[in-house]
Amino acid sequence: MYVRATPRRNKNGSVVRYLQLAHNTWDPVAKRSRAEVIYNFGREDAQSRAALERLAGSLSRFLEPDAAVAAGGEGFDFLDSRPLGGSYALDGLWRRLGIDALMRRLLRGRRRDAAAERVLFALVANRALAPSSKLAAARWVSEDVHIAGLPQTTDDACYRAMDWLLEIQGALEREVFHQVASLLNLEVDLLFFDTTSTYFCCDEADEPVARNERGALLAADDEGEREAAQRAGFRTYGKSKDHRDDLPQVVIGMAVTREGIPVRVWSWPGNTADSALIRQVKDDLRDWTLSRIVWVADRGFASTENRRFLRRGDEHYILGEKLRSGSAEAKAALARAGRYQEVAAGLRVKEVRISEGERFVVCESPEGAGRDAAVRARLLARLKEMIADARHDAEAAGVTFIPIVNYPVNWAI
Image (cartoon, rainbow, N blue to C red; front, top):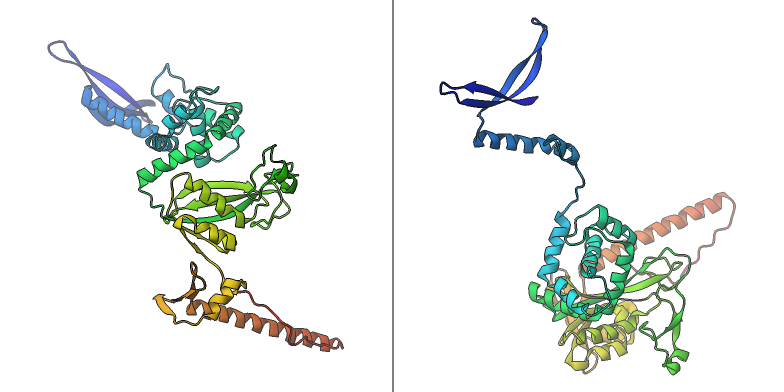
């Protein structure tokens, strides 16, 4: 199939060309091929050329990039093609938040590569679009994606850029937060905070160094503290929430708004206890002029010292705790009488004050209690069935079966 031009000479001597889409067919009678016109584009002018361009564009959708270029005419060689959409959208948001200008300003005067900001953006884009290592990210930038202003990079440049990022981390986090809070109209009067852990598949933990209770490194001149301090590497062994206590890990904390938008993220050594972390989190966010916040966390942070710390500066907190945890406060709350009020379908609450500055809101879910009772009943029935089967098998084998009765069982549903 091809496009052919058929000339026609007018009486005044001018020549007009007509464009046609044709293909050759075999004529068995004449024993030769002949041209068969499939479509007439009409006289060769701007309108017919536009029709040809639309046809060529439609056909090129079904071709590989190099084949499409080759089909477009001679004298062109296909060199490369890279996706642009994802990195283009992220780069637009990056510039809309002013991160590019902010980084250049914070890095001004330091010994650095002129493309440091672009390399850092490329690492962010890689983490969002195709998470990988620094080495793979450098290859991704150089071969697989188009990053405006950064045709290629190396893994060494990525590592240097990360070192520079650590130098400006504090100021950068604060400024980016204010930009995002302004752009998205964030409400930061209520912050939810929690931690998790992630492990590393490596042979050994990091070399132990002296740290305080919050996992921060102690300076060389803190001799008194260093003697009593715990020693641990950053990637070290601890209580894993992934049930991988056999591997080194780190602890990750995040504070988010009521809409779930992260305000700030922290990381600590893998053996850091939750109880000491919320005090550091509050101090860090206070430096961002975030005050009058209601903190929401779970029972891992519900120590007496933490509650006292969270009340400083006339701030407030909401700490979730299971009443069967056995704490003195939970026992005191359960011992107080009071009338429940229904606040939502299937949820009743009552307020109990156990001290001048603290109160418990005791929540009861009759529907949840019913589900728990049904689960317990099914478990008990299953255990009785297993005991009966064991008794039958023992008697069939001539073995005396003596069940243990009145054995205390703590159910945790």
